[in-house]
Image (cartoon, rainbow, N blue to C red; front, top):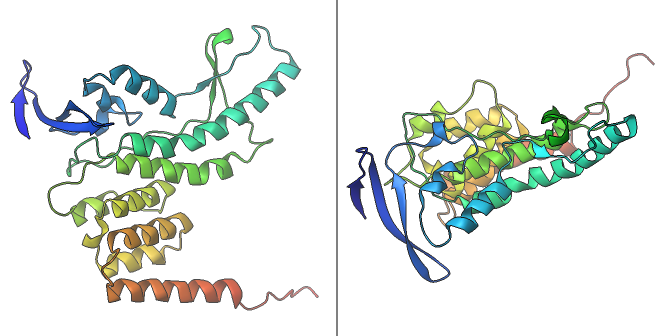
Length: 267
């Protein structure tokens, strides 16, 4: 690797990657693009090679931060509005699957700036109507359970955002991980934990940190942390991590299968 400067005195890091056996030059800015990257993929436009056209098309296909286009008549009727909802529901299910492909596409493509919080692109399930001056239409919550539809996809969306971080030299900062921890548990932070675990960066967390995460009793946070720890500690036979996991499983199992029966006091 070597560092070069362009005419605007912006430092870039040059390197060589290989796709399909063909090497090409890529660039990576040495400062963070997270705050300038609302859909999580803009920084890929810096890469210039023979695959530029294909990458642009893939970026558009994998973008979930913009309303999808719905084709409707100029003057919709009541039946057309029902058709809009049906079409939007189908497109929304497609949108929720996009983070899986985007996580693989943007894997380790941007540097980590440890003085900034991670920005996760939005997962937008709304539609856009070009025939009606680009009016926006949302899923009707009275017809579909929108929150249930978005819950785990938002988790995977955060995993994809975390996977785009290039692992730093050495270990990730424990301070940075806790800096990104919200006051109340969210599926977004849960997804970040899993992505950091897949990068092997959760070893910096202390047993106290892990216990505090588990004590929140937040389903997606527990899942993200457990899977992330398993990935980070794979092959180590770390006894402390095994004990924490076993304690959690014991408590969860007893709550699920041995909770005391409810009593109806109105009988």
